[in-house]
Length: 88
Image 1 (cartoon, rainbow, N blue to C red):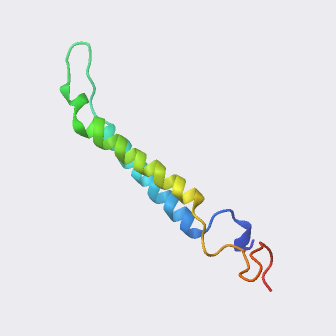
Image 2: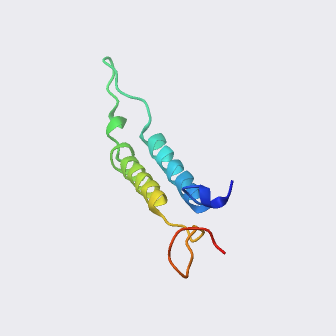
């Protein structure tokens, strides 16, 4: 298969992987022990869980959206005509 048959270039996949890692880090920051009926855990309302982790996840999702719309320089466009097709 030629490189032009793929919808994404190498940089798109790298950016998607980085965004996924950032989202996973955000979910890890959100995790922790919860409260039960017998004991109240005030750590469920910590700044790490309520403020930092959702912002990290949001940044990860935004970076993944950017990775999808990012246009690589290695596309099959010809510079002369601006059309997509085979290069001569």
